[in-house]
Image (cartoon, rainbow, N blue to C red; front, side):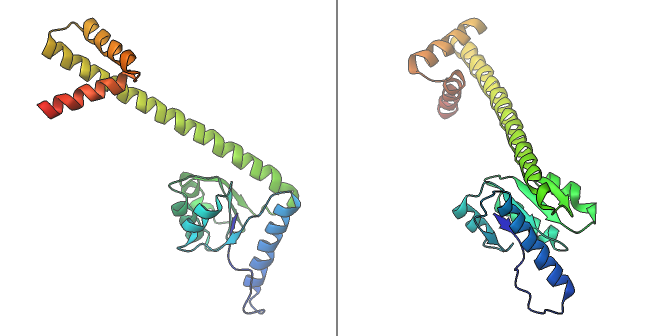
Amino acid sequence: MVVAPDLVVSDPGDEHAVQQAERSRSLRIGLLENGFNLIATLPADVFLAERIAQLQPDMIIVDAESAARDALEHVVMATRDERRPIVLFTNDEDTRHVRDAVAAGVSAYIVAGLASERIRPILHVAMARFQHEQALRRELADARSELAGRKTIERAKGLLMRRQGLSETEAYEKLRKTAMDKGLKLAEVAQRILDVADLLG
């Protein structure tokens, strides 16, 4: 899916608009020539999130020039709940916003990179980078979840030790046996014990 300005040039005398429309057309042709399925070309507007949710594209290509930052903000907002690889093609050589773009989730920021033979490797690298970052995010989320689970188990053990006079080993074994008997994870049993304790005071 491409997010780009309208190809229709209202004033044929506006050289900048004509050049931008031609560049945008070249990008789309390059995508098709390289075997990519271009499912839609959309403007960066307030309806972008809904359209992306409906279309479910594998990748979003932002074709922008002077309005690159505005277009990018629309795309980032539209994909914040369901991340997708974003590739920004621009002729704007002002690179002050590259760091912000990458931090916002752009997988590739390409300046003047519209030669047809460059499109395929650029998009493949962007997809690989996105998948790698997603894997790292999942690992981080799993590590945080595991740490939170350990803390919950420790709190539940402490509660059992205080209330039932158990040793640490006995409290842990009681949690483990309950988890096995009920087919639950240890952290789930621990959380239930803490919830009941909170409820009963």
